[in-house]
Image 1 (cartoon, rainbow, N blue to C red):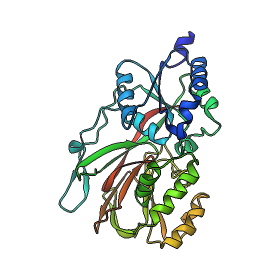
Image 2: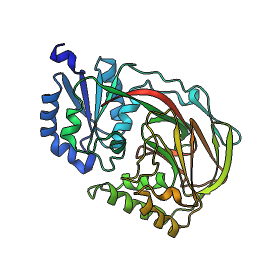
Image 3: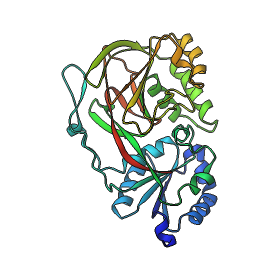
Length: 336
């Protein structure tokens, strides 16, 4: 086997603002490492929101075999969305008269079914990297891009309402959620992130609590069970971590064909603050107001309207509840 055929033809998509500008600052070294490990490589920098999705889709259409995201969880999410033709929200989901987002046709349309996703994590939160074992730093992550070994991962999809109350849809790799986490993300993404993941999200959480009121929701699991609750947050997890290192879904597996739902119930603000320390250790599941479920589909509707019932997708804040979350088993090849 020749050197060229031993490695995947790689297009790198780098977010220069990720990690409070770390990607831009470190780029000369990163490029040298990439070229030393990948014989056939090219790159582009993102220029704004959703640009990574467009870059990934175009790179795959022009024959690149692997697309590597350099940045945080938001950059990775955008790149993963570019592995598929843009879905038509009205074909995938419908808002019914009872306030449920109903799934219609969510069949995937990959740009290239054999394409591989790679990651060099250099963002603020960096939660997905914890689930895939990329904690040693950029040089090791780049070395792991060599060769052709891959792992099949599940891909999440969610139908939700955008800011204009229109149906929208998007894919996610790690964790989607509804509740205070969406408000936290909106605040974290609107501030400087130079303090690092944990401090950034801790400050954003404190700001979110100042205006937060628990929301009343109804939840359906796989159309077979249903419950109603007042909640602080609902986390629909493919991976285990979110919010800058919170171990919110211990035992969630990226390749089991299911989502883990973590329901944080009607906690007071003081009770929630006390519980947050336990989330970093994965010990919050013992709390009497925290429940865990597993399902292939999770539908959530609001019983009472709330202006802060926002949706979070891999650290991005694209819309609000109601929403339906579903999983595509083994849909994405990830470079190991």
